[in-house]
Length: 232
Image 1: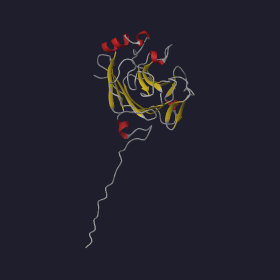
Image 2: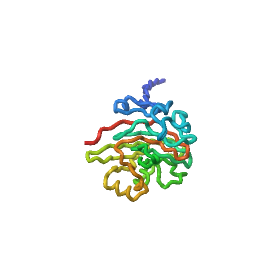
Image 3: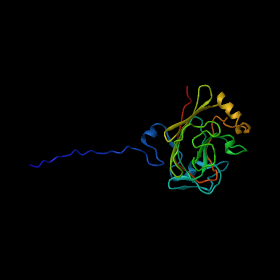
Image 4: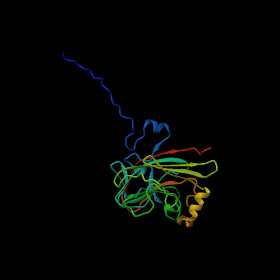
């Protein structure tokens, strides 16, 4: 006697994730906006203290790539309370950074903008590791991927009821550091750092977001931001 078994057909439905440089329905509903559509970096970025995007920053394979130099680039808009999500990929031994609260003064961008470090942690030469608040708040974990692979960094900055700015760093889903710009602890750490002599460092209520040209090739994609209301 032969038996015939009819196995149920199970439909496998993949999660509805957004493609690179696109927003999902959920992200749109949550107020996220694209800073880069994968094609035109000049729509939302320009050079620091420049009218246009430097030639050394190019669009390649759906990413903004620092290829030949040209200096730092900044968002055309300025932001106060926000959440920023960025995918970055660094070259072997490379270094870059994501700064915020940047104002266009007579000095360089890092004179006013605190920096979230971007680096090849294994091949890089800077003791400040990727995802740290540069020279001020180190992380006790390392969730970064090797040079040449994509990392997702999320920065949340939100004004508090007391006028400070609570900041949170997350790397590849792992919480890194939390601090408050303007708090007693922040002021103490800044006073003991190289930033103590930099007029206006971290003091702006709002400013540009900056991608640093540190002399190495680096790529950024999936740059997304949403404006937040101050905390009550």
